[in-house]
Length: 320
Image (cartoon, rainbow, N blue to C red; front, side, top):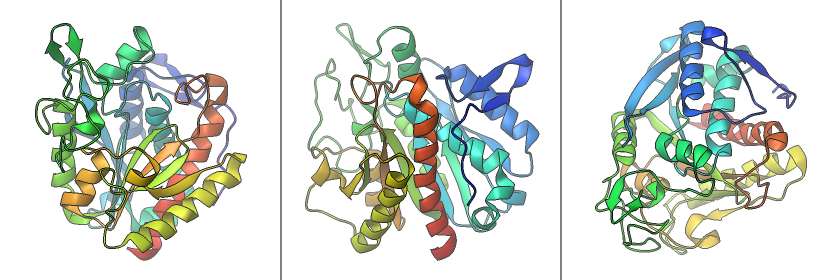
């Protein structure tokens, strides 16, 4: 595998815009990047309309399939569930940059695996975090009494609202009024279910606990039947991540290493669709809170996260 550059990477976009991986993009810039990819690489990249956010913003994905061959094992990557975790959607876009713009470097993977990457599930919350409240976590649904938003990673349907969330609509961990009550999670659910037949691996990119986690989030003691396979691959990804920049990563069950919480995306996928491989990759940390990574550190973390992703992708290419 080639060495992924961590130097400034400039990507020319439509209308004369220029995006680089040293600043955080707006939701609109992410959409422009998707448009550019599918225009310039039509034999490998296709735009997918996932749905529409509460405030009417598009939620989009890119399907990556060499020569548009449908019948390969599929990897779904979801990012940007939580608004303030800006490094998460940027990581998904950097992954797209690598496997689409540099597709010729990943022939073995792309000959054997298709990808469906959703860079920004929560565009409303992301933009609110960018413009108004850097600490904002939730979506931007109107809950009444001056309260807004749902914690999208507590709104998925598997064992929804059983542990670790809040029924207070003003709380950061508000679970919503029902499973999939948020249009963002409902749209992602529909995308997952529509592509479940070939789904081999599901990856949620979040920040910034420096962990590789596998289901289940709701319990410290409940594991999928193939927990040994999940543990072994998670350990391999951790070793890859730590080799990049020396940051310490850990791996294990999500409900063991973090506070148990139901309604997560990985629990929904593992508990209902049940592909072999389901993970959360918690990126490297920076800044005052961990998730507020300074732009000066972005390139290093994006490269690091992408190497972790590629370790998973290579495993699927060789084993599924």
